[in-house]
Length: 319
Image 1 (cartoon, rainbow, N blue to C red):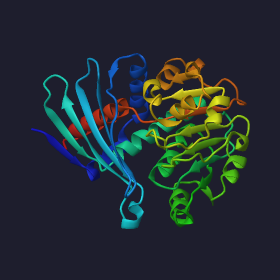
Image 2 (cartoon, rainbow, N blue to C red):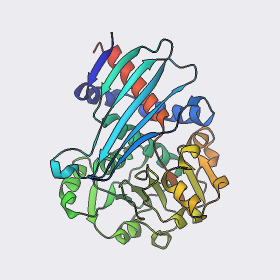
Image 3 (cartoon, one colour):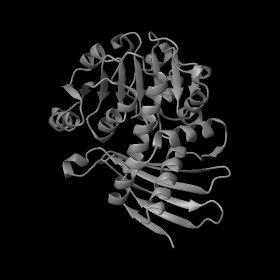
């Protein structure tokens, strides 16, 4: 019988899991060619602006394959609704049987993206972090900062937003989690104080330029998950000493790397894949003065790993 799990059950089990370990293993398997991931299926909406992604795949020789549907509608705040929604379907790789339906409402997509940001910071952030800068004040902008706790002692955050309406709730929530937050609509205030920056917006025009960045800055860019979006001026990637992709293949058709390649400002041979760095950390940051950029477009292997972990934990708990 197919198991159906709802958001409340999923949220209860997730804190018990070692997702960073599972996700890192998934990235390594992907970079070693052991994961089958077809091209992303997507629907792009104009009025209101939004997108739906369909990501799916399997690890060769594994027990399961996963199909994930995740949506982001960026004016949902007007409806008093969260911007993200979705579900994950986990099937037996041996028989095709639907083993479980994870009605996570987009929660697991948000968590697995935040875990990826944590892994990237472990390998690419400078040793001494002066401040954490975050572009955006939504769900991902909150989770990304929260999930950095295991890899840095820094609790100073400068959060940028286009609208000041989200500042109070962001500052209040992150304050309860131990962060000292400053909010601003001026990107320069972020870059002047922070050498670890996360961009988590649906922007279609660059928010940062190369001249704004202090030496040794690391940027994790994750908002640009379609060909139409862009958060970083492409010269940033062209000038960076290290550029890392969650999937080199996928980043050639979407995200910051896609934009920089299209502009002729980035040599594709300069890009390293995250799984390769996890397997061989010498490929990561070697100097605190290096400018580094990670382009996270979201790969199905992340959905495979988190869906498996949640399914097994819920089964073990007798849910």
